[in-house]
Image (tube, rainbow, N blue to C red; front, top):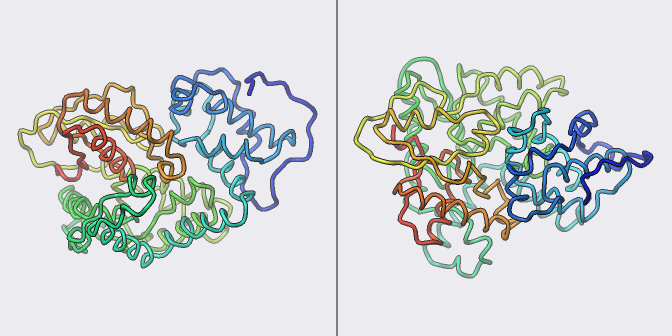
Length: 408
């Protein structure tokens, strides 16, 4: 696709009534300068204009102005995007690509064939919105891994799944710890199934920072995955549940970068809802990523620890320094990864839906971490942790992934 902006006469906007679509003011804000291209992981891997932010925005604009359809080519362009928002960080014009790609994916989802659309809605909207279903899936995953039945599952599913131990699932997490202002801790979906040691460590870390840490509802999903993959109504339903859960808290603490970034946008997500708009904005203003607290790590001589910046920390929340500061306080020497902060390729369900591109990025990230010489890498997002650990395992690198909470 050419990046030259040659605008034919407008037609009828090609979106379905009631379906989220990119705002016209957003899509025309891109001036096609191309400064985003070196920062886009999919463009760097493929070299295709259709896999670049500029190309995707050009396609969004064509659909918005009725010059193109939401067809298979458009779906491929949007599906291949990681939504890492590195282009936003690089853009001198402040183009809000994150909310644009989420809206464009909603358009794509509405036009998918019915069987595929139903399957995605079941997995993303129905399962993630029901804590008991998340727990059942976690137990099934743990049993399949313990009995090696996972070998019967297609590799793109088994290779990208988190390692869920039965012992870990039974790990007890305190419901309340410490004294001070009330800090409700989001349990989340993946974190509460595959990272229960991190959850327990998070409760201790929040209490150590001077708060009364209160554990949120088990397996309460924030809605980030649903929003990222084109299901805004499911995301709104989950947001309402979390808002009702956390309204009485002085602060809401989140230990996953993707979740903290998404929850801070609740006010925007529900801005047009007369009942929930103001409530959403109030809760969103209280959301803090764990790394934003005044954490007091246990000091020890820990040596070098590589630093992986989750995209939703750096590009979504402008957070680079806090992770490094926590490592220094914990007695570690932060080591930068020589890949210029490129996305690891996890991106929610991307590793399952786009296994080839995700695999390329996974191996690039794993090799960059191994080249750092560190034997530990700090990762503060569950999708990144799973992706990176799998990549390190693939290349046989003796590097262990840790969450910063485990140092505190």
